[in-house]
Amino acid sequence: MDLGLVPKPPPPWWAYPLWLVAGGLWGLGFLSILTIGVYVMFAALIVTVVALLLLHGPNRTTFLALSGLGLAPLYLALLNWGGPTTCPASGSGSAGDAGLSCVEKGSPYPWLVVGLLLVVVGILVAWLIARRYKQLAAKYAAAGTVPSDRSAPN
Image (cartoon, rainbow, N blue to C red; front, side, top):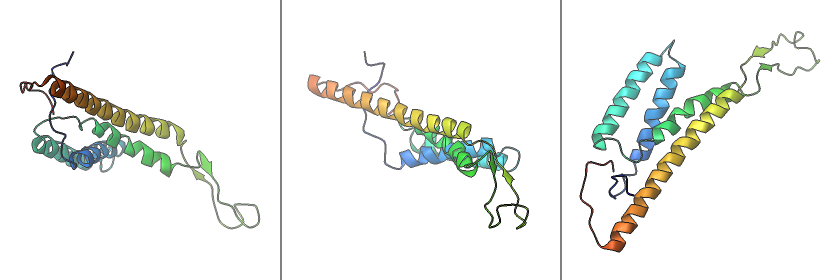
């Protein structure tokens, strides 16, 4: 069963980082919606439309936008690392003596799990699709047939 997929040449190398950037901008836009998020989402929309136009529609690299989407939660987990509360060490053992105060941070673990899950799922889906295209190309090459170009993604 070929699911209507026809083997096509692989997309250009720049398609991979382009979709990562698009997904990263969408993730940053969602996380910063109350401040600069609207502007970042507008930039993400522009990058997404440019990617779709340059690549003639979605292709096997499009799922890497999921991985890019996971970069924003990973960055938020990095910012909250050491949370939920972080107190700087002082020489006398008391934070009040040196004028230092504790910093309230959120737990990084929910953000870490969401970010890693999105990155892994995006890479896994893109890899599975690429693998399926390679299998179809080998099947058509072994049979000596050239598949008709149906309107399938590349």
